[in-house]
Every structure is written in C-alpha cells, then in structure tokens.
Amino acid sequence: MGMVGVHGEADRSVSIAAVHAALDADVTLIDTGDFHAMGHNELPLAEALCGRERDSYQLSVTFGMLRTPGQCFGGVDARPAAVKNVLAYSLTRLGTDHIGLYRPGRLGPAVPIEDTVGAIREMIDAGHVRYLGLSEVDAATVRRAHAVHPATDLQIEYSLFSRAVERDVLSTLRELGVGN
Image (tube, rainbow, N blue to C red; front, side, top):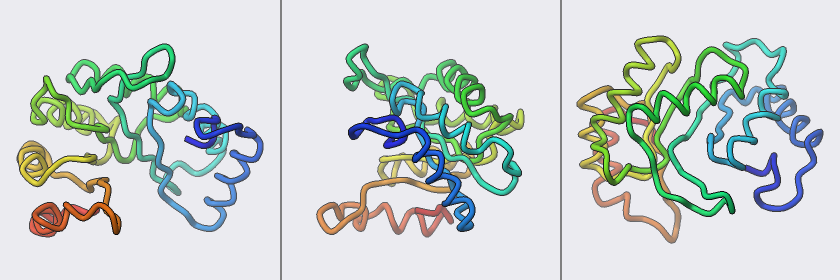
C-alpha cells in the first residue's frame, strides 16, 4: 500500500528500489491487493518485477474489497464473475500470466465461500492462479472453503491484542495443513 501513497506521500523510485532490495535479499513473496490505491499499487510493482525471473518470486494478491470514488470502503464483491474480472485486471496491471496466491480479502456477505472458491479453483485449473489463499475468516469458513479446494494459507489478524484465532482457527489450520 505504501508504494502509492495510501499512508502518505510515496516516491515511486524509492518504492521500486525497495522491491529490488527485497528480491536481491532473497525475499520470494510479494504481497499486494488489487484495491490498494484503486489498483495503482500493482503498477509500480510490475515495473519493479520487470526483467526478474518469474519463478524467482510468488505474487500474492488479495481481491474483492470495493472502494467508492472517495476511496472509502464500499463493501465486498466475491461473486464468481467478479473473481474472474478483477483477476484479469490484476494480471494485466502486474504484467504477468499468473498469480501465485489469490485470496478474497473478506467473506462476501451475499456469496457463499464455496462459490468464490469454486471460481478461484477454475482459475487455478486454467493456469491463471497457482494457490488459493483466504483472509480474515473463521474456522468454519476455512473448512467450507477447503472442501471445495485446498487452501494454502490464511491471512488473519493475530497479535497481542487480537488472539481470537487461538480458540479454534489455529487448530483447524493445523488439522487441514493450511499455513498462517
């Protein structure tokens, strides 16, 4: 998010240099969201990755968080058609033929997780995505998603102040072999 000034002014050349330094230090996971700065975060990232061996890093993209023209939160869209649409935009902005790890940013309130994961599974089968990720969901949702297609990981808040995942999420992840 910081590459495009979401948290204050950003210098494009410094952002690109930071990605280069990370890759040169053998960082292999590059994590972004298609909604960071309305998709513009993916543009300098694509520039930073240009010329790098594609198999030397994994792109992780979170999707589905809607924004209003004022860049306020506008809800979640995780419908199957939206999954494929926003994936096409990310692939184009990032200048790549596949995303390593693709995850809905939140559970869409109007769409069963099974439908969202089914669309991602189709994109995995088509070669546009390598792995399914999840974000900010509970243990029951992890199980429902995993039944459609095995999840690779879960991004979820876990800190000294936020420990709810210890109740049942972490044990579910261990049981299913899902990273966190």
